[in-house]
Length: 188
Ligand SMILES: [Zn+2]
Image (cartoon, rainbow, N blue to C red):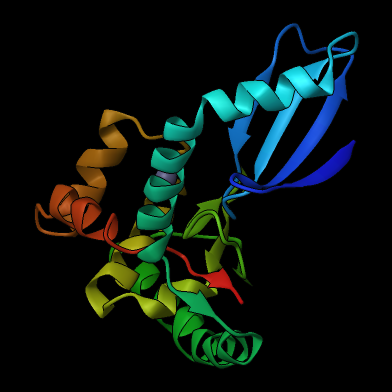
């Protein structure tokens, strides 16, 4: 692997690969480029290829920038604060909702998952990301209810949705749509 600083295209990481059948160009999240080319290929040709894709590269970089601009960033100190808030809020609220609707869960874990708001294991162990503390109250409860419903239906079947939708007075679709506007932040 080699890394070159191209005068117009910026940083390009060149990777010769046994598996590559042809030249493959990727724009990474930070905007840098990565070219993978076959073992018997030649690096100069790979770079020529990237140069011929200049317009596509610009467009892709622009799109990435727009997409990640909406993602907030967060510091480790913020995460500690959220963790304290989560410990004060989640166990009590989950317990209250479980009692109210007659659910049984076996354990609760407050995670720092960046990929999902919550999960429920086959043994009804519920895990909730501390980042739910960034959501408005009704969506936070919605996440907890979603996981509680999984203690009865370990899937996203029609019965699961019927149950969840009833518990949120018919707002399941609205709430899911609202949730899409929130992203779990990246750590700075
Ligand atoms: Zn689910």
